[in-house]
Amino acid sequence: MKIGVFDSGLGGLTILKALLKELPQYNYVYLGDNARVPYGNRSPETIYEFTKQAVEFLFKKNCKIIILACNTATSTSLKKIQQEYLPKHYPDRRVLGVIKPVVEELESQIINNKTQKIGIIGTKATVNSGAFVREIDKTLPNSSVYQQACPLLVPFIEDGLKNNKVLKLILKEYLDGLLKEKIKALVLACTHYEVIEKEIQKTIGREIKIISEGKIIAKKLEEYLQNHQEIEKKLEKHKKVEYYVTDLNPDYEKIIKIFLGKSLRKAEIFYTTLV
Ligand code: DGL
Image (cartoon, rainbow, N blue to C red):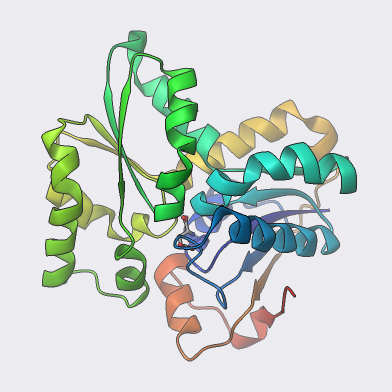
């Protein structure tokens, strides 16, 4: 059986890239719903429906465990998938998200549970769900969380606009409020933002620690599999990756390169529909 990685689009390839670096031995199936990206401006009900279809698809591809690499899907749908969908349809499979690992990492970095001000940036749906705030409140009750939705960043990043004047202005506009709150750490709670980490760091200054998800998710998955040998033993280890997308638009190959850091051959990418 395999490890499934799901994202609303191709941004989740930043997470897959980290998984392939840290845990290259496994077989992966990546699914990017790039026909319907972005999810971030949609309602929680729609995001749940889309996420359920994606999970179903990956289970049919024989995934034992699925990582919802998408913050928007994790924050709006993971609980319901774990508590309602899995027990009813796939009781022996697992779906994990990106929020818990990130909050655990924050916890390990905040020594003695001192008061800390933490900034979160993500899509509108992620911010509105309050999922990060709830998880941080539970784990780090002495911390304060400040959130900012950054809906303009995803299209900018997908267009490959990195060192761009307008992007700099947008970043300043989005991050100024968090800087005024004197945050000490900033979580990049969106698959895409890792690509412009340098630009974000320049905007907020070097004193504020950036928490980006790829490496953290890889480390936490490794720990999870060590602690769940019954799952680990079932995973094929032939270093094979299958890539599925839901749209073959003129830009998808360019966008894959932005997030995966390398081009894929056309023959390696499969088209699928989820409905
Ligand atoms: N993958 C989404 C996330 O991590 C960003 C793109 C979207 O809005 O669908 O939140």
